[in-house]
Image (cartoon, rainbow, N blue to C red; front, side, top):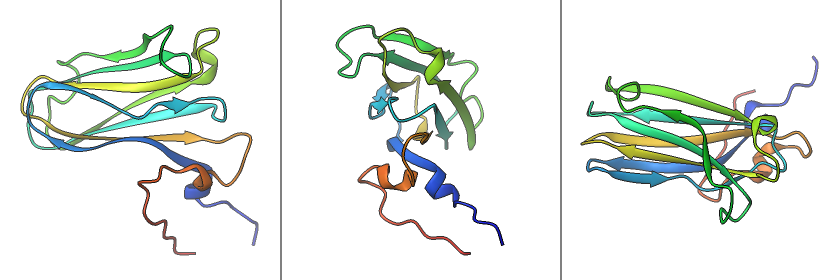
Length: 144
C-alpha cells in the first residue's frame, strides 16, 4: 500500500470565526500568514437566517498596518440568501500584491444570520500541516 498523507496532515486550520448568532456587525478572522502557504480557503457556513452576509477577504502586510485592501469580495445579495449553505473563497499567494503577505476575512452580517468561518491552508514548505493548526483545534481523529 502506498503512503498517503491524511487530509489533516495536508491542510492546516489557520483561522476561524466561531459560530456567531444574530445582529448586524463585522466579524474578522485571525490573520493568515501566507509565507508558508500557497493557497488559503475561507469556508463560510451560514445557518439559520437569510438576511445576508457581506464578505471581504483582505490582504496586507504581516501586521495589517499597511496595504489593507480587499482581494476578494462577495455581496450581501449573493451570500447567505439561503439558510444552511456554505460559500467558499479561495486566494492564492501568487495573486497577492507585492509586499503583502497576510490575509484575513471580514464577514459582515446584514441581519440576524448565524455564521461560522473556517480557513484551511495548504502547506508547501513544512509537513505535516496539522503542526500549524490553531490552538483551538482540540483533536484530530482518523480511521485508517
